[in-house]
Each structure stands twice: as structure tokens, then as C-alpha cells.
Image (cartoon, rainbow, N blue to C red; front, side):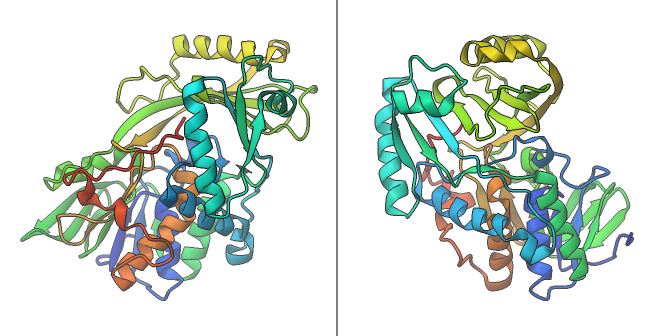
Length: 385
């Protein structure tokens, strides 16, 4: 394990998928003096490691669709590029619509997806009921399904990039907390850590739900808020079909997908208060179980073998912030509002392009700039659960 260097060309804060991908894409382009800092004992144990692992194309803004198109292709190619398989399982995503107000929005989203080459299907209520079985959806009006969506393994993707970044010369450290950033005339000069101080002129804040802390340190408002989400995994459910898709009951923000021989289920609490609490809300879990049993009665034959809570990193428009800020040398790669894991591969590459070339080129992300909030150029994403 390398020690803390005294200087770095770029210091990346956060060892989840965003930080790991950024480190790899910088180092693989010949930038040797790259330092990534993770405060936990293992990489990817923050927001990345507590996500449900979904990967999908089904969004309702062009930029999110394009990011997913590029990122899912990169996830498919991860083993070829880094030697580590992402353990992709394309079971498909099925969005079930039971509220009339969602139908027209999803129909418009489908047109946009088709215009960009995404082959999402529109399903009738009866088609939804057949595909979602053994879930019970008597109230399904319609749905959308994309067979190219599915699941991947967060730890595999993070470690694929970390190990490849190290092979290219990047220093990636765990058990090292960044404690502060020092400026000189509004320019980044140093990063203070639990292991010492590093001189640098460039910092990438990829801290996810904890990103705002470093903004506060340097007088910069970062509109990213942590919000608890939780899920559970059941014991073995032998009746579950092998081809069971990732099913989202959109009106309830309730979802199910296969996890080993059981099922993973989550449900968003829309009354959840902003905060970094990652303990299990037992009262909410009971409401979640009740709703899940109504949709999938055979859950009553199984028990819960694991449960987890993690944090979304919310922005006011549910889109990320990627790029420079009002402080010279301080960059943001954060605010993905629940879909950062699946977009991490491409967004790390885009951040590397910004740092190397001055702008991102693989995908046009100019609208995801920091200034959009002050200039009231918000771009809301409807399809967030």
C-alpha cells in the first residue's frame, strides 16, 4: 500500500464508482500523479455499495438517456478493459403504471427513447400482468419494458477501475479522510487529510451524499442533500421464475428483483427527511413489507435474511452536477439522485475529459453545470424512484 504523497496533480475525494472511474480514466491517459482518497476501509462501501445495482436506459431526459447508453456499453466491456467482470445480468426493467397521470409522461419518454435508439417496449395492462408474474397488478393500466436493462455488481465495477488505475500508476488509498481544503486567492492549493497534507491545484469532489461538506469548507454552496433509502433481501423463493425482471411499481416507488435465490425489494419513503441517517427505519420497513406482500403474496412464504439502508444524493432537479465551480481547481462529480452507480463509468470518463481537454466530448453535458441552479436552468427528471 502506497503512503500519502506530498503532491498530486489531481486529488479525487471519494472511492465509490465516480471516484474510481475518474482515477482510472485519468491514469489510463498517462496522468501518473493521481491521488484518490477513501475514508472507509474498503472502496465502494458508501452510497455505491448500498445501492440496489440497477442499470437502465429508461429515463425521460435526453442527457440521462445518452449517459446510460454510453455507460451501460462500458459496463458490458469492463472485463475486456480492466480484467474484472461487472457480473451483468440483463433481466430487463419493467415499469408498471397504475396511475393515469403517469401514462402520458411515459408515452412521451418512450418516444424520446426511441428517437435516441433505445428499444423500450410499450405494454398493455394484460402484458404487464403476464410479464410481472408472480407479482399481482390488477390495477396496471400499462407499462414499459426494456430487455437491455438489468443489474450489475457495484463492488466489481469499483474494484475493476481501482485495480486498473493502480496498474496505470494512480495512488488509491483507503482509511484516509479528507478533512479540509486550503485556498489561495480563490484557487485550490492544499488538501488536508487524516494522514497529512497534500499540495494540489485540482480537487474532484466525488463524495456523493457527503459532497456539500467540502463546499461549506470553502464557502461554496453545493445543492446536494443526503436522503435515506432502504431495502431488504429475502431467503430462498423457489417459485420465483428465473427470468423474473426488475419490476417497478411506479406509483408506489416499490421495486423487486431477483437476488441469488431470493428477492430484493425496496420502497421509497416520500416523507423521508433530509439527513445522513443510514440506520433501518423499522416503522417504514413494516409499511414496505405490507405493500410488497400485496403485490407479491408469495413473499409471505419467505423471511428476510438481510436489510440495508443507504443514501441518495439529491439535487433540486434530480440531475448531477459535473464540472467546474466558482472556486478555481475545485470540480464536482456528484448529485446523481439515485442513478449514479449505473452512470459512474461514463461520468468518470467525462470528468477526465474535462480535466485533460477543458471540456467533455463523449457526451454533451454542458447543461449539467454548477451554474444552472443560480441561473434557474433546471432540467427535472421524472423517472426517479
